[in-house]
Image (cartoon, rainbow, N blue to C red):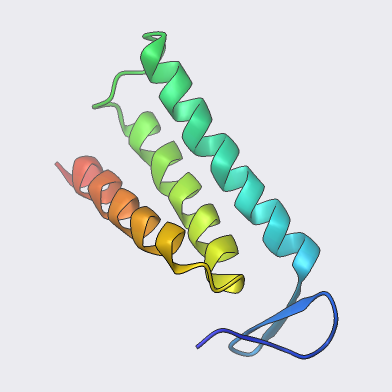
Length: 93
């Protein structure tokens, strides 16, 4: 379970002390990845059934999950777990 470490600017992950800055960077990279995949799809640069599109979506979802979990913001965690599962199923198909 993720909990605040009590130390200012840090989050606790099992066996790791990760700074708040890194969690924020991972989260923002996740957001950029999801938006980039969507944009590339809308402008017909990537198709929704391409492995690259689904991989970028999956990586983006992971980044958002990490950041939202660290903040104990569970709605984005659930949404992005679903997003990740959909992307992984599409990759396997």
